[in-house]
Figure (tube, rainbow, N blue to C red):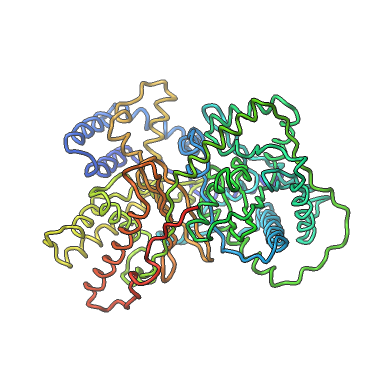
Length: 633
């Protein structure tokens, strides 16, 4: 990107306000309200005393608050670096399942391999068109929808879709943006096929390749990958490992210039195109989600990946397609916008007659060459085993609730997102008899370089509602339950508004903690307190990722004994992707889905009962489609 373009980007961001620093007392009061009903009474009394001491006049909190306000004055976004390191770069867990989400595209029915390659060619051609729109700053500015709709949003994240790369580090990773990843004259992608990697120039002499040219080059790559005599070991498997393990392996690899050159080509590419072998599994929604998240491990396509790159498009010969993203560079909404553009491009061009391009001599694809020895080969085996353990551990259930969708919820004059969040709390309470610290991502793109903060959905109002719905003594009337439902939804909505306007507590508390570290202070007691530690273990990690085309997003849990719950509300149904780990005796995706289905139906019945039957009758979710899908790879 040229300097003038970067200046234009800066000017666009300057039209947006900076992320605010909330008042200290407000954050501390909200923190106490968020945790009081989640911890034992004795523990809360201890926490309250610690918080009051921290926030006292002239106390540690005021010192740290002053430093944060000074930081806000000096920086475009005071929380961005703090948040990025804490949320992603310092996390040592492997990227697949633990960090990288996937978007599952509509299932394809390829007649043969050439049709699959043609789909891949159309996809890459769409990538080039979308990248050109980004570079020309021709994407229309987005405006907030839902709560406080109409506010313009920061578009900066789009510039990182095809230029970012996450480098593994021994203690902390590094996110770099390669502005030369697509110069005006040339650009390349990396194609993974049979665990081999090939560099393919897709822009030459300032002219992007046509669909026909890309298809021809992909056919050459498939032929080259089939040459057993030239195959290298599965180097991509190393990127699936724990970040420290991969950093150590990368240090070994880069001792050889040949490997440095191969890595440089991957690190500066636009994206990865993974041409996967047929998985041999039934293409259920659950199986497709699993294959996107981890490739099926060593027995399938687990090594046909390079997880450090921001965008990995998967085209399976069996029609299982989608995209896996390295999440530190951008949020799910940006991934959705790009994915929907590409799927619409593919559908549109599939109906058109592709004109053969004028013949020009193209540089053939280049196989990436690697140097390795016995020590490096041992790293492959260890990485494969660790990935396979992760594959075997992931308990995924993609469930389409067909009882109703967002249109029914809107008729109740309720926010669909808040409604689903309360339903998730009810499902968890049905499973465990308690509520736990819950994470729901909230976009703060209303501000310059805004990413996300956390909506803490396990409110005291949600607890009152779920207790009334599960009380076996039947002491609550339908009217009382409905009142508690509306209170819970209002509390969720109010917290959402606070979060999207920069007034949530998680980023603020993180900033105070980081400020203490920068001042070389001893870690303040509030951050050593077991309540604070527990409040940041998000046993229920949730996110709404709505789409306008037939696709869905999925991801894994963020803690070993937790659930990931991604949902996609549609007019007449809701798609849920529920994940957990088999190793935990406290979780089961099937049990959670069963409770979720029951709870959604019970809430519908409550709404209809309290509306005197005025709400439109929707087909009973108990009939067809509501049974949890438990198929695994």
